[in-house]
Image: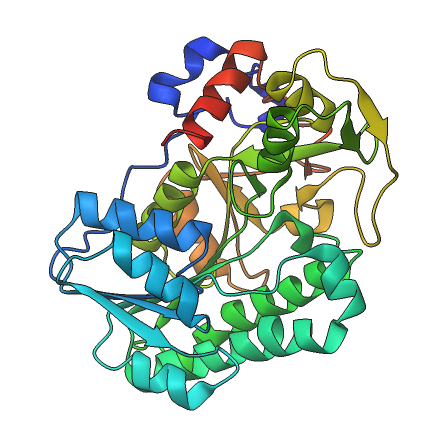
Length: 358
């Protein structure tokens, strides 16, 4: 069936090996003998990415580029493979990025200021990292002759109402436009856009888990109606690796993933613990959207994801359609409250089991 509206809700039976619907492993770029750099590499995604790359491939180098020496030191204790490299640097510093990208084949750009309220109150810092940093990554990758770059985005970049989302939308536009800057034989750029990562640092699931372990009398809920898209770290890494393989350039890839209410997540983590409504935080949405109606007109549907294409690039769209992709119907949008892919109770427990597995 061709549209999201035609798919049945996910059940626990669909979660093959806790894959939560799609595992995003096919196709997947081959990193054997390749040099890979990840910005913001000491974060939750970076650690998961480094672990999976080490378990699956034999890279020539895996370079962790980040600005926090303590986090790099701590991560280095767990990742002592001979191919690991550690680069202290900030994406605000283009010269340092160019130095780190010498002889690099692939770049994953994960560095960002991501906390919505903090970005609201520190707008200039957010712009310097998320927007100017994106420009620096693009220029450094082109000058260093990197083959492919995949930038991590967020559902908050679609129809943004907060500065974080707006800054990531600007970043997305920069990476898409970078295709024209690099030329026909130059660096290829693409973006991956997905929702909340279960178990990642700063997400609500670890907060609920900690409060429940401490015997909290209640769990803070911003709004009982709130819904979010959810993806696991394993899915997120696989989605990046598979997008890096299939990309033609200038796509914004969006995975097909389930959504659920925040209250359902709280009940799964701490059954029977009451909820305390605290109100929506500054810049926060009630529901998230990953593809709006206007973007849908230039979006094509693949088996396990969507790809938002440049509206003017008819040749790229035709190439995808010739390979079996499908256009989306008029009026389509991909929103967390209208997403038919919902986790049932068993599926949600499977998600949490994977997210908090040691």
